[in-house]
Image (cartoon, rainbow, N blue to C red):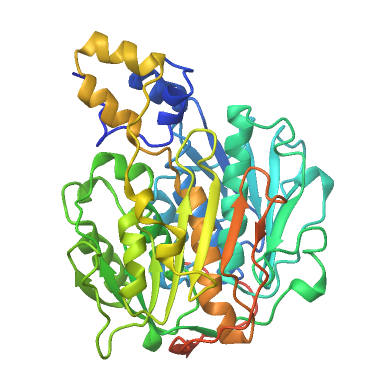
Length: 465
């Protein structure tokens, strides 16, 4: 019996097993341990909350994908302002998240750049992350350009981080020849704008309003991406949101590869409590629901009526019909090694009920098919049940989850600014221009309770004491 099983296997390294690249889980992890990344922090990277959210998200997602390590080079002598880490020094937080802080950048590592670009010879893969208003983009540093990183919207900073880490991962994996040599971006204000997404018409307004309370259903990969993203938004100290957190599961080792708010000390603890403790430390208030979401769910007086749904279960999705939420945004991800970057989003109320999208017939789950690698492992280890269970687990990584999270939260926040909602969106992170969805429409439901976003003073970030 191997130490790697369905509850311990790294969920992204599993793709090498599923694709038949390696002969064992140990070889898959060894392969991913060769993947390394650098994050270069140039002048001005911390001047906006979007920049801080971009760095923290890039780092937290990358350390869970690049198992050889993530090096951070640049000026970390600033105090962070994002709610989740407000008042803490950037260097201490970077090291806490798993960064190796470097005093020089001499090795030719794939590099993501925030702020001013490095001088001198550039690594072969060197990509600039940028944002402005509701738009975000990655561009080769050698090509120049990018968005001005002026108007402060953390959603866009997180989106840039997701694109950058994905691009670097495709580069080290050899998944796409043009990775690192192309410009990719989108607008969260008008996500279906493709050819002209950079136009001013798609920049969106200044971020002024944020949800006051939300119900998060599921605290796994997607649910924690929602919570992480909320922790990056410009909530005032006296206006942090109230969150109802619902989950029944305990943290397993495999969750450390996908969940942005879990660390080794959280293993075997209820996920909902681990997440609540981190949010409460940042001033959020929480209520915990430690049971499955199901047909008996009803929203009662004074509970949030807007929900972010992150449960990968067809029966639970069907039960949204009767849950009595005013607004629900549900996201689902691809699960195989070919499609794990695909995101599908639904907003309810929409043109169809949840039970019409996920029919009763679709609740039956297909048995996992074993490829030759899994069959051989089952024979060698005399563990057909364990290998079948491992094969059934999804390939997953949080740089996909956080992009899904900013898309979902945009569906909640956009109507607060007079924008439209999208009942469906399909986004392919590998080829972002291939995004489709329903025509947007005005939101007709009960408005989500909101607070005013804190307006951060323009200028350099505060230096750490």
